[in-house]
View 1 (tube, chains in turn green, brown):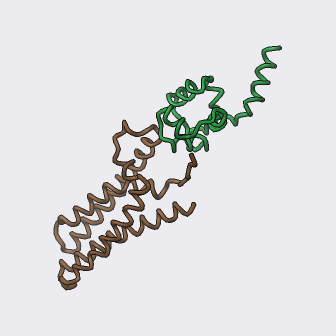
View 2: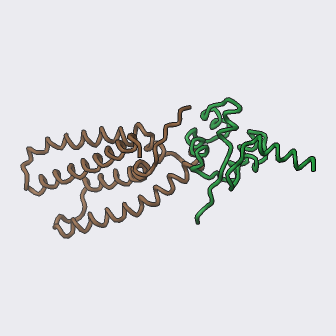
View 3: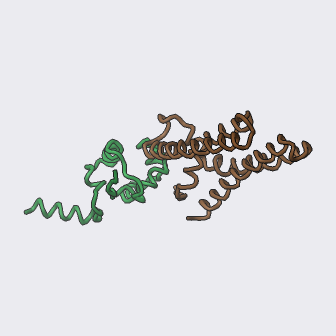
Length: 86
Length: 142
């Protein structure tokens, strides 16, 4: 079965929190190379792993992972705020 | 393909070529084609195998990866090892069949302990070799 490419914001979120791949890998419970593969979008995580990231970053899964290329977080937040005001 | 992957592939080819040289020399001596004194030259392919083994399977930790329990691996590594093992089963079956036929047609009889040892080595190294050959080597800085 051919799977779709899953885009993510792991690299941005990790850099925002100023943590290394090794530290993030330890918190999530994967090999640090797997974080590299995920950041380069060369590996699609399982649902369980996606939820682990969601719990760690305290963000909804759809804010971290998407099947469409992700916009910058600031842009998305602006859009969300606009939707709320309407 | 970067330089690490190139050198890993070269070392891998060197490793298996040395295995073939080792086996050929052994059977040439066993068959009486070459004098027994040439047995000393077996040290060269053995050294080659050991050195290249360290480079391909040791330093890269691929031996450790393919010989770990699934509980010790994360989901990406499990998938990687599973795929490599599946391919290695097919390659191993083909190599074993070819060797059995070669022994039968060459009049060498049943496979002996040396060939059995080689097949054991092949079975254990093939999954790691497949990963070493196919995996893109990226150095993650932190």
